[in-house]
Length: 297
Image 1: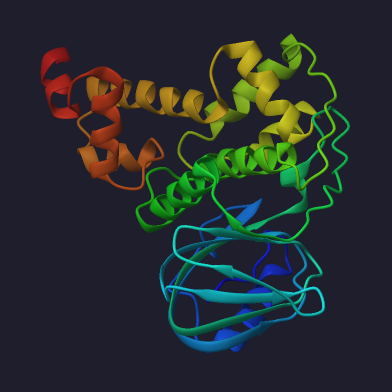
Image 2: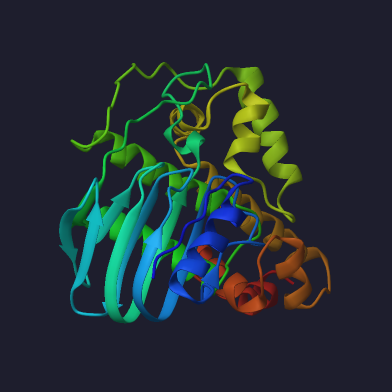
């Protein structure tokens, strides 16, 4: 019914264990997508009862359909219920029994430890002391999971920067909720000139192949969470949006100074296909790549 993966090297073992528990493999998987700090799985099938042994990292499960009522038992027999539209947060090390008795239709988002990285420059992960929660209603969390599912089903750009950014939003949001410890260290000013120069150079070199938020933060010598806010302060935009802007700028140059077909330009600028390239180009410039080429030639 639900997924058991992590964003670390242990996620494959977790998801294999969950697949055995429910009796089928995930219908959609982020394995192979290059995501570094979170993993997403879609679960579709029939299951009566599934016993989940303790997983290694926090898992957020979003029930989107299937059986109308699901009995959930944990903590020496404590019983709760879930249904479509609700979420369940399972902390690491928590065994759970799911009494489904029908169709499974859910997503599981598995969060690596560095999603909860300290909001400081020491890159020391937090232990958020996540507690089991069943029956959650949270529009931000559900929208984040569906945004990741959409990106997984229909990728738009190469690299993990988009998925990293959403995973960090989820991690920070969970830390601010009552069932997690949320320290609030202050955020300092933006990046230094040398940090910003090195990060912008890395982004420029990554236009075609993509880059992860972790790689950018490592270049600056900061934790991922602090880096994202420092970059926003320094540039006025997010790393993902900045990279998209640079991809569009390179596309404009290629459209003006080369005869490459649009499909090749899309690939050289880091887009997964021509359709997503054209859509993003039009959103950014107000015109299509073909029209732009005709106007500047």
